[in-house]
Image 1 (spheres, rainbow, N blue to C red):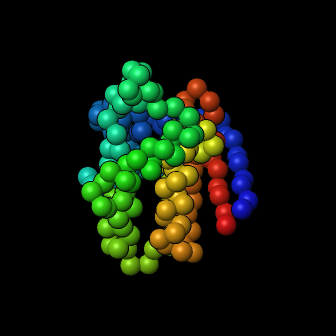
Image 2 (cartoon, rainbow, N blue to C red):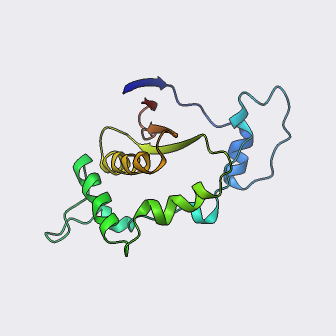
Length: 160
């Protein structure tokens, strides 16, 4: 497996994206106001594609019965716990397979997660990608690890 990492400086949003995010009237697009295709794009998610995995409060609990969920290993454990608690259907079958079955000529899956090598979601994503790989065989899986706004964007491509 080869890992390629590229760090790029964070781009400021275009006037169009800023107006779109704020709910204001959108400015007219011109060839001089568009820098990149993403300046005028906006992603609309399917309502069933945004799946809460755990309540946000559970990430911050620090009681003795519920230690805080931090670190790669906690993410691995969280994935295993959620898979075993899902009434006989694991996360893949319940949340991802219906979307895959709707595709006529699926070529790849893209996954965006926070920091692939550290943190809860890195561990969770590693386990989920392993499960996806077992189910879909040679289908391309692209995992993009994105750091927070305090650091530059980091994109990682994992190849088999």
